[in-house]
Length: 227
Image (tube, rainbow, N blue to C red):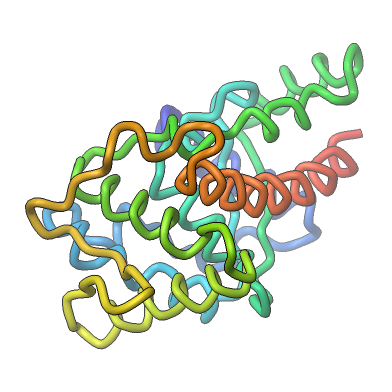
């Protein structure tokens, strides 16, 4: 995120107001506080389990038209976790008041502006602070969304299993036809494996479609609360 902590709070307070909730009666789980930043690769595997347990995810867009969170592979992974087949996690979008005002002005000129932001997402261009984490997620995407599988169903099983393995305290490693998240040294992503027409390219398009659909649905809800 690029917003300050105060802007983050302002975004969450506005979200509560728009949703008819009393902000001072809500509990918010913030990964930056609960995930050990010195051991992210160990703790981040719990996120899928936590999302399903809490049942709601709020993503803060800042700036609204070029959200930094949508360029981070872990954030896209969290969106996918929230919207796996069978998942009942409610995904919502919000933003600091200044960004919401800017979005309102933009939507008055072009009602599809927010939709364009969502559809510009491409996980292949996303980044992570730890290169090994990025490589691990890329491998997971290429394996679980590969051509010939039942797309989202196969992905759902693999993604859920990766979180469950992480919750058990066991270091996830590749097993059989399913590649779980791993941050071990030596895991490399082939540079030409995700291009158009390749098996990896098809896998990423399937993953992108899942994430875009989830965010598009949330964007529609956000638009209705904007006007």
